[in-house]
Structure formats: structure tokens, C-alpha cells
Length: 151
Image (cartoon, rainbow, N blue to C red; front, side):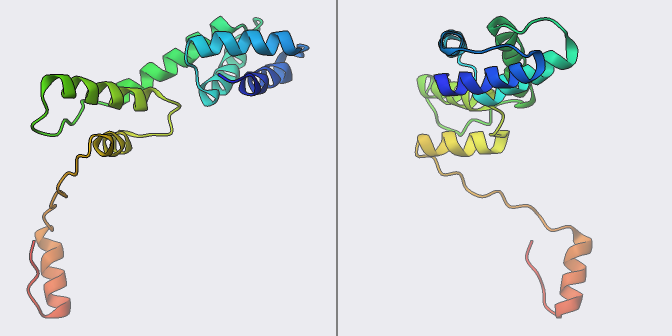
């Protein structure tokens, strides 16, 4: 995490606990949160979660623990990886790694978006999935336009 991002996290914490933040604090927090690859969005959310659950002084350890928990929750919601056919074992492993990395990020990417991004990174274009039109809808369209409808 960049020092300017750590400063934002500390500013949020200071709003709750009135801490005084100096450059050494910013650099130390930046280093700790970078080591754990905590995103700014997760760190800021972790500050809020911490102070809604505890009166204890917030430390990088607390932010990291909460952020990793949020990351695990997002991964759990990601479900199974929808692998494209024909990947060799090494490519399949890399596909999974990239997919889970996207889902574990800051929560801005959902399952479908993760698949699209990873597919593009491998040059994969999936055929659109045809969804059959329900019989009642097909009958209503045919009757409204006096013409048969495929699907």
C-alpha cells in the first residue's frame, strides 16, 4: 500500500480514536499493509468494522486480519471456477490463480467479471450462451406480431 493510501487509513482511524499521525506512522503502516497486500478499500472498511466491534486501539495487525477475512468471504462467494475447455494443466492452474486473485481483490469484481477479465488475458472468447425463450413469452410475441419467433 502506498504511503498516501496508508495516510487515508490512518485518517479514518483518527476520526474514531483521535490518534495523532506523523510521517513515521504513515510509513510503518504502509509497509505493514503492503506486506499483506491489503487494498485501500479493504483497509478503510476494516477500520470501520474494527471500531463498530471494539474499543481497542487499532493496529496494522487488526486491519490485516479483518481485510483477509473480507478477502476469504469474497472468494467463498466466488463459487467454482468456470474453466474454458481445452486448457492444459499449467494453464488451468494459472487461470484459477488469476481468477481467485481478482475475486480476492477489493470487492469491485464479481464472478462474471473475473471470468471475462481472465478469459481476455488468455485470449479466450467464449461463445454466447443461448437461453431459450419461455413458451408463454414466445406465444405472446407471436400473437402480438403475427409472426413465428425462434427460440
